[in-house]
Length: 212
Image 1: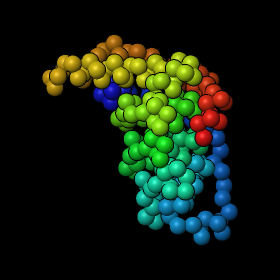
Image 2: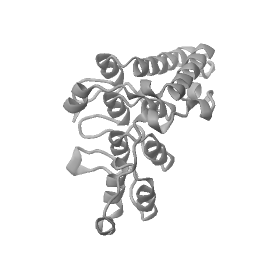
Image 3: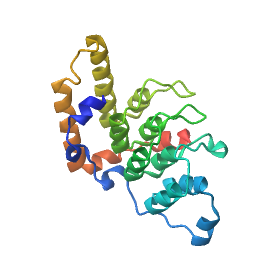
């Protein structure tokens, strides 16, 4: 699917921060921050949407793929998803965060973004090569989650990605990198997401609370 998304310009695939539920970064007490090790700082800052602290933690040697044994094996990237930060997710991915690393309950960043209705993050993870075939401990993959939540935007993205992958596999190594129809549809979706940010704020409180 990456080839399809990469065929769309970065400008078209960019989604405004408002569309992903982006909020003002949470601040931390400087004293508390100084006492934290880099890994713990990155973990906390990722959920708090605090990019300066995230950058500081990485500069001091924090493991971008740190697993929190105290929090069901979640990673900083999953924390950024939960915090609702599209920019934070992009920042972590640019710094070698693993897009398919799952927590102790079998849920990767794509699972969490789908459960929370963060369409912009789903778009980003698909662009970065996230797999959608893995099921969590409840036997749910991202597509089944989005169908249950009736989130049409995410269902569309996931189905497009899945169909494109299947077509590429059937055509073999010499097949086209991406069907023009899918490229056009994805471009239209990206345009809609950029100009109608309210559509990306669809959430399911029932799923959101039961997921935690």
